Length: 488
Image 1 (cartoon, one colour):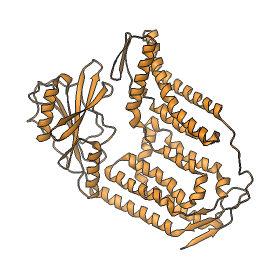
Image 2 (tube, one colour):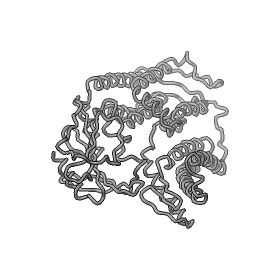
Image 3 (cartoon, helix red, strand yellow):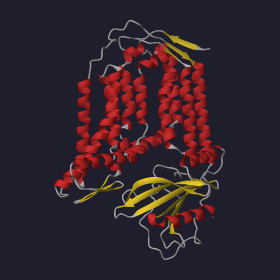
Image 4 (cartoon, one colour):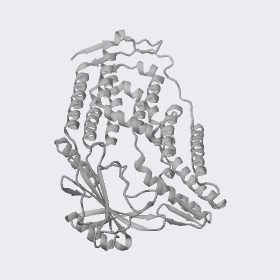
C-alpha cells in the first residue's frame, strides 16, 4: 500500500509545511473538489434557502465559523499524527447513498444532510480518528448548516398557544380559543407561523452550542447549557405571545398589533439571547490551555488507495445522477378534466389548498352534494416541483388554523383527516391522498418511496394529489365523495 510520510511540522508558526506534505495537501484538494462537484446541486439549493428564508440566514456563517474553530485548535491538532483512516467510510458511504436517494426523490433535506455530513466525514478520512477527536465539535457544528427545523413550526405554535392561554387564564383575562385563534373581548389573535418562535429556537440552539464549547469546561455544564438553550426560547416565546395579548387587552388594541407586534418580536429576541448568554456567564469556568507549549511533533500518513476509491465513487455517482436527471421528464402532463363530477353554479369556496408550483391544478364542487363538498386536485411532473413537499399546505394558514387530526377508513384506505377552523368560525374537514403509477397512497412516506423507486428504475415518477373538504356537518356526504373519487 502506497504511503507518503512527512514527519516535519513547523510548530512555531502552527502550520503544516507544504513542501514536506505535498501528498496530504494534494489529496485533500482532490477530495474537496470531488465533494464540491458531487454535492453541487445540494450546495446550490441550500444557498438559495439560506438567502431566501430568514430562519436559515445563519447557514452562511456555519462552515466559516467551524473552520475558525479548527484554526483555534491548530496547535493541539498539529501535535497529533494525521493518518488516513477507513473508519470514515461508515459515514461516507451512507452519506453518498442518501445524496443519491435525495436526487432521485428530489428530497432537499436528504441532499443537504448528505452534503454537510460528507464534508466532515472526508476531513475525518484525511486526518484520521485520533486527530479528528481534537476537532470533533467544529466538525459536528457544520451540521447546523442543514436548513432543518421548519417541521417544528406546528408543534411550537401549539405550545405557544397552550402556554399563553394558560397564562392569560391565570391573569383573569376572559378568552375563547379555537385552534390557534385566541379571542379576547378586544379582538382576535392568531398564533401564526411567525409566532411559533422557530427562529428563536434555532438561533438559540446554535448560539448556545457555540457558547458552551468556547466557554464551559466540563461536559456536564456544556450539556446542561445546551438543554437550557433548547428550553429557554420556548418558554420565552410563550411569555412573548402572552405579553402581546396582555398589552393589547390593557390598551384596547392600541398597541401590540401590526408594526408594534414585529418590533416587540425582534426586541424580545435580542433580550432572549442576552439572557441566555447571561445564564452562560453564571455557569462559565475557565478552560485551561494545555497546548501553549507543545513538545510532540506529528506526521502525515496518506493512504492513496482510500482517496482514489472515494474520488472515483463520487465522480461516477455524479455522472450517473446527471444521466438520471437528463433522461427523466417526470411524465406527460395530465389533463385534469372532471366535468362529469363537477357541480354547476356553485359559489367560489373560501377553502383552497396552497400548493407550490403545480404543473396544473383544478378546484370544483362535487355533484349531488349541494356545493358543500369541494375537491381540489393537482399534477406534479417532478421537474422543478415536488408532489411531496413541506411547502404544500392543505389550507391557507392565514385563513384557517388546525384544530385536530383524525383517521377515516374508506374501503381499504385509512385517510388522515384534518379539522380546521376559519376566522369566522367555519369548521371543515380535509382528506388527502396521492396517485403515483396509477396507485393510490394515503401516506406521504410511501408515496415518496414509490417515486424514488420509479426514478431509479428510469421510469416517469410524476404524480397527482387530491384534496377533499366539507363542513363538519356534511361528513356523510364527504365519505360518499371519497368512495366515488377513489373508485373512479
